[in-house]
Amino acid sequence: MSVAPCDGSLMWPYHPDLLSRAVPRYTSYPTAAEFHEGVGAADQALALANVAKGDALSLYVHIPFCQEICSYCGCNTGRANRQQRLSAYLDALDAEIDLVADALGGRGRVGRIAFGGGSPNAIEALAFVRLVDRLLVRFSAADATLSVEIDPRSLDDAWLACLRTVGVQRVSLGVQTFDARIQAAIGRVQPDRMIEAAVDGLRRAGVASINFDLMYGLPGQNVDDVERSVSRTIELGADRVALFGYAHLPSLLPRQRVIDDSALPGAEQRFAQAAAGHASFVAAGYVPVGFDHFARPGDALAHAARDGTLRRNFQGFTEDRSDRLIGFGASAISQFPELLVQNEKNSGRYRMLVGAGSLAGRRGIHRLDQVRQRADIIEQLLCRSRAHPDFCLLWSAGPALAPFIDRGLARFDNGWLEITPEGLPYARLIAACFDAFRTSTAGQFSHAI
Image (cartoon, rainbow, N blue to C red; front, side, top):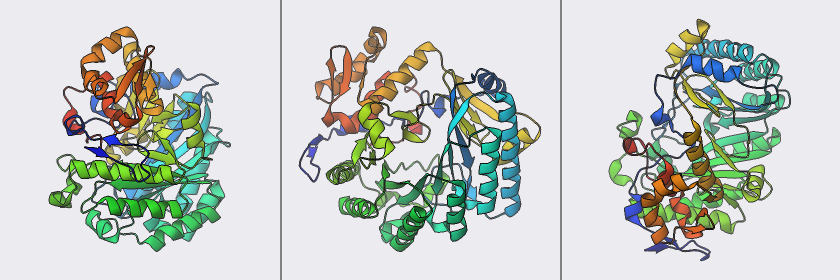
């Protein structure tokens, strides 16, 4: 079977035997599934001490709270229904900011600060202003680009004024779908007019780049539903779009148990939905960024995709070229060339650790030379659809690669491994051929489509 996008420009071949394998999204390599407790605060401190004065840094701040909890969500988040708990968490963030800033001693140059969750706008707008101010002062980051994930359901005038005041340039809106029936099925009811008002308010607040998160593979969803959501996204002028496949993992995410399994689209339907969404965005002039992201031609993400500087980190595809990302908050992950380290996941224990003057890193993994080589290959395949593996890594990946080569989804060209246009939906699967850890943890991941 082949699935034809609506513009008829490309036939995506459907190979269910290949797509049945569960693989990571590869926002890092190794993935969090490989983290262990043999790495922690001491390793985190050493990595911070190794940051040089001129090194580019990015910061990520995790706010693990939402006003309402969605049934589909896989994020580390809880309900923002107790002011005391929110205040205690923000105090802990202040303490961790001081610990990290002291460890850096003024070294490094912060170019980007991202706030995610959960929903950062689950906290009060004034508290967010204070948090931003503390980061800018402690890290001498007055020129940093600020980005924030926003829940349209709790975006009010105070928050819009706050975004303008602190100079937020980029916002990501959790939209998922415009279909009211599907919204009810996943516990995220937000009428079209609410999302439109959010976009209008953000534009008035000076936000230059607005991302929409959309999903396919949701309960009761079909191709027409996906195409209508894509069409409305284009009408509203989203600058960037992430079109994710819903990952139904109720054994790992108990909140998903309220979703009716029998209403979920099958594998072939999911594939058709992904293909239709991709074709619609490309037909509207959006630049495809990897397999499941899109950007308007003038957006910085589109420029990075075209000029070969696209990267991949815990926020997904990015034009951020920094190799050092420092995470703040419960469950946040810090990335250094030689180390990945994750903070304590439980917000109560996180508060206790930083309150006692300790860095919060509790799990992670060292990245030795061959691991970093594999990470580079995986990133290149996902960001540029080609990589140049050395002979040993290519030889070890050969048997896993063979089905993709045989079916024209990938090819070799003068030492380069290239993903063909027909192979784009299989990019994560092809990248996984270079993943040395995938024999024992496949059950923790979703399918590639």
